[in-house]
Length: 271
Ligand SMILES: C[S@@+](CC[C@H](N)C(=O)[O-])C[C@H]1O[C@@H](n2cnc3c(N)ncnc32)[C@H](O)[C@@H]1O
Image (cartoon, rainbow, N blue to C red):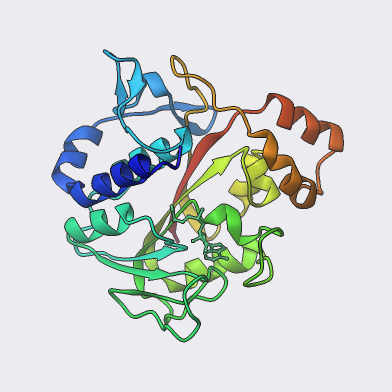
């Protein structure tokens, strides 16, 4: 999955990404509303190739293909926007699309050296509970496969796990009134227990209705047919046994045995 060819294809896709092509690909309704969620089923997804019956994103794990598709769909029109990416790592797709569509990309990342101060238009040290920018700075705050790690207990060698209440308050503080968020995360894979267990009501409650409006949770690949399911890798259990403490052990064991991984995209607007 992480072969050299795979990583070259991933970089090539980010390098070539075009806002115009994304706008054409993602125009119109690509999901359906169901029980208060937006469902993006593989067979109705613009990335699905019906002739070959495969996802046309030709690199990455099944979830990474959804990440790429969702970024294309949500971030291809950032004209005039100041966008902050939290936990940018090394993946350039969002950054390239934001810049090419006329926005300004700024990033914070806890793996950067602490003395590398971020400035508008570039990346530097920071994390979700401490964003070193004044109030009301950004039109949009995004995170790509990052939010699920903010409250993670394992692998937290750089900082203590953060409280989601503090992180979302910090995101809200740096957003302008009317500013928006976009976060995507895997469900059933790793990170904080609410993402592992797919506890969508708990995730929803991180964005209280008196502070956020138009909260939308999109389920990508939960309805995976005609593609194959992406079963939860058995190796996850080591971390799950540390992360998941609020759910019954039987429920957790059952999830590990029968669960599939899919992707959640969260969007909302600051009131
Ligand atoms: C799975 S990586 C994803 C990186 C990149 N966005 C991508 O899609 O490849 C998770 C990222 O979240 C970052 N991260 C973890 N905890 C964080 C926190 N509390 N605040 C901000 N970023 C965090 C990590 O440093 C890492 O870059």
